[in-house]
Length: 236
Image (tube, rainbow, N blue to C red; front, side, top):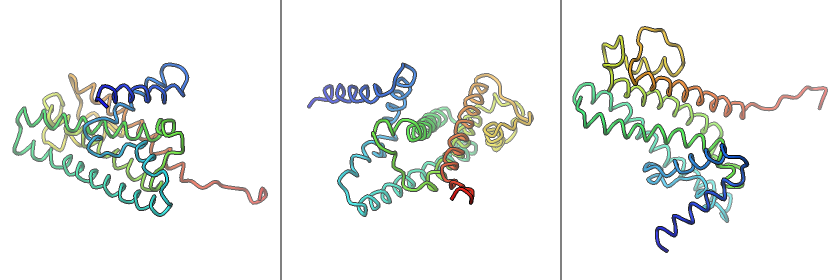
């Protein structure tokens, strides 16, 4: 089977999934976030949800638990590797490699990681259940909450590098840690005013505030899912 035939089959499959939703807007975003799953990082992970669901079919409960543990550990190793990169890049850039090529490479990698974080959480919460035609499977609810909080802090680090590498547009900037301080207060919408963006950094701060707010909604929704149902004694 040629790659063009496989591509056509893939597109038909995606459109068939999207046809389960009415209107135009929802199917468009479903399709958009679906294709975001084919970023270079996701191809490397090989952990797309619908494939994982199919892989679990026919397995015993014990086999499913074993596979889920292995997949969870593999994903978390990748998350730790990304965190190390996000923590190391600002130090290297600020002290050793303030070069254009290093800035571009790091910006591309971190931007892809940012898109990856967004699509993983949006697909998990909104769209995977439609594609898999079953309940979305996660390893543990507590782990899911910890990972989305982990992603939340990753977003602070990613935008921090954007501000660091464009610090000439950050009014009040003096040391490299200012960029990460500004990223943190922007994401939690404090905004003391001691630092302020200019130029295209204003668009970056708007995007960060929007993404941070959406992720707070995601975190709260997952925490609410863990709250036990309360009953009045008289209704037992």
